[in-house]
Image (tube, rainbow, N blue to C red; front, side):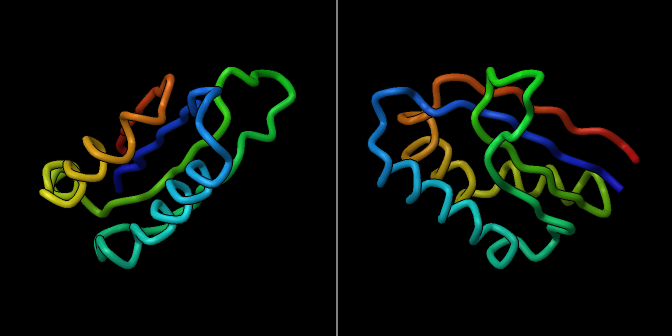
Length: 97
């Protein structure tokens, strides 16, 4: 099992409706990428570190399934057209569990 985790912060000048649209699109990922398991996405509720506003975690049965998702044309298009323009910072970790 691979756990793929991403924490991120929206740019401060991004309108609330744009934030909501990006988060809503993220929520469609499990239905668009059937290899995804145990999807969870939401706002950061930590009181210890508020440097990131949101995060998600998802599982894949294999590293190849993760790579297939990351290199898919639909994922690349989402990142290029909708993600990068609104995200200020992010951190990504993938690990074997």
